[in-house]
Image (tube, rainbow, N blue to C red; front, side, top):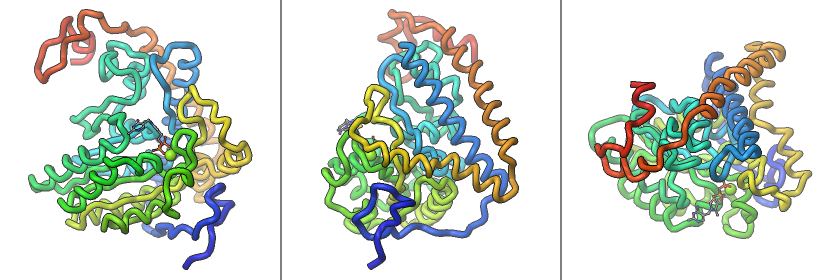
Length: 359
Ligand SMILES: Cc1ncc(C[n+]2csc(CCOP(=O)(O)OP(=O)(O)O)c2C)c(N)n1
Ligand SMILES: [Mg+2]
């Protein structure tokens, strides 16, 4: 049995055996190491701007952020290849954007504009684009697992060498759909990669109150699937772990469950002040911010200087202005269009305002 958890690396996760972390020395190109940092910064900044818009009353509905978990969402999505299917959940805006959703669409979506991906029909995370291989999240936790698994299995049956990647939280892994989805995936030998984002909390419920496993990777044994455990705040390790899982799944090895140990740096959503999370725990995790860790690695490797990263961060910040202003200046949908577009190929009640602008 391994020793106990290194509390300085995984604050709050003590009292169990040390995680059996995935380690690989596979080389990652300089460009990719930089891209990991850039996508994490972009994700953080889009969400920060959404936070401001939320407080101004401009966001319609809730705002669920993935702050602190960008290493998981960005690192995993960047490891996918053309044709792969990705089904992000609420903490995975980074994956959604890496797969091709532009920030402008994200702002339009959250402000329920007619110019957004759902044209104002949904107001937060429930959007996707099959042409980019993005499957929209399903609110019922766990329900996306059998869907993405089925899509990946269908693609495999058509001879495609692709995987389906989706995500679940520690809390969501206690649902029936998690069990049924993973069980179905393994019996079908579906090329599914399921990332279990273990951030210690399911809303205000700590892990110890809803699951008896020491680590969630232990569930992989129960279902007979390959399990990989990774430091979710190291985007490069997440990237390597997903590459490894991808190779396993496309070569017919079946599904892989990856437990990414990470932390939720905000409340469940912006309406939750997370007063139940001890401040010292959040502060300790701030020391392991995935963006700071990646920046340190880039600087130490001589890939970028602190000044260069600072300037690039500012450029990303400035670049988003045009996107959220576009959304702010976009119309909300015409009420008469609400009943249109329900069935495939059906005309909408009014001309689609995006068509003129985009097609
Ligand atoms: C089946 C189901 N039960 C409850 C909810 C309400 N709900 C949404 S998110 C959430 C907490 C999820 O926690 P976890 O799975 O750990 O993900 P995290 O929010 O930590 O990323 C709950 C209870 C839901 N959407 N679906
Ligand atoms: Mg959780």
